[in-house]
Image (tube, rainbow, N blue to C red; front, side, top):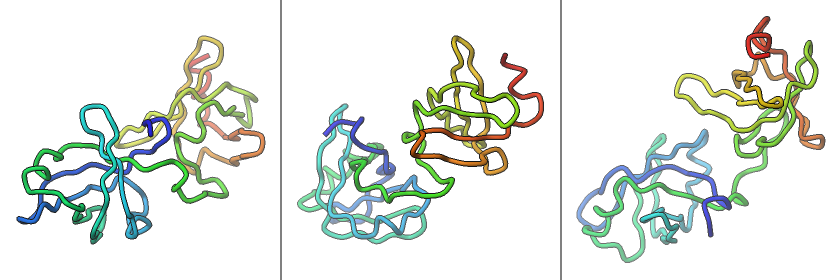
Length: 172
């Protein structure tokens, strides 16, 4: 399993107790969707290593997890490691909701300017996510907010937007 076939679930933040338990920070919108996990991939020295879960208790965006056959020393060594799950376990989204990785390569059509380019990436800043759209050799940054996104057309792999007045002109 490679990182390209997975999504980042969160991170191991600290050991817990004396039985080799760890605390996860779940970097997802609905942590409760992951209350029945059987396993996760832990990134250890650049490789994804499967770890099997014996018990998980979710409280907000944190989870107390007991891995099968993990010593307290091994738990300590996993602190700071990122957690991954295969993309196929993501719940399907509908309407104007989407996963950031899902829209890479999609076209963006503005209600005033028309086709403004292709999404190269989604820059996830703490205060605001941005579409990084490339039109020829020009970069256009558009906020990923409900007020801008009019329609997500999965069949055509196109997002229809209404950009704030003058924003696109700044880039072109």
